Length: 177
Image (cartoon, rainbow, N blue to C red; front, side):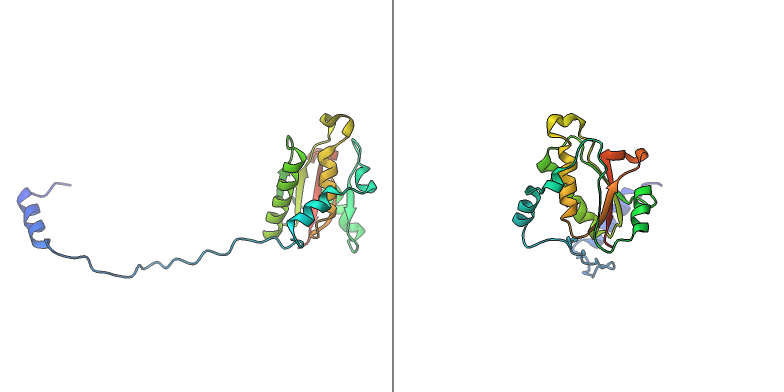
């Protein structure tokens, strides 16, 4: 493109001096943002949930290295548990808790579950590790995950994963649709 002669540029600027732009409505209307997703499984208060998660029953404490975790709410059919155990359900999200302390892991797990429930995801995998580095205390994260999942209303079943997906160091979780 050639630059117009300087004389034409001056004449144009002189002709439009004092002109004001027209006001017009934008053609594209912006839609209001949807409200942020809210977790459907909130209890009376976060303090109550935290207190519940700190109280361990003897059944919850009875988790050792290499133990399989398994849980299901009433009404979950044997065939559903069998499919879950065999890894037939497509894992839609995954959370890895390796390297976190228990307080961080609990917070991450609750946030993860809230996001998955809001997105209506049905099957997720949580990697808690086997607890081999926990020493005489046993698998600390595994115990904490077990307790939290049992007390989360939207969790209808969970079990230890297949060897290819982490074995006793990971679990498949089935969420209520």
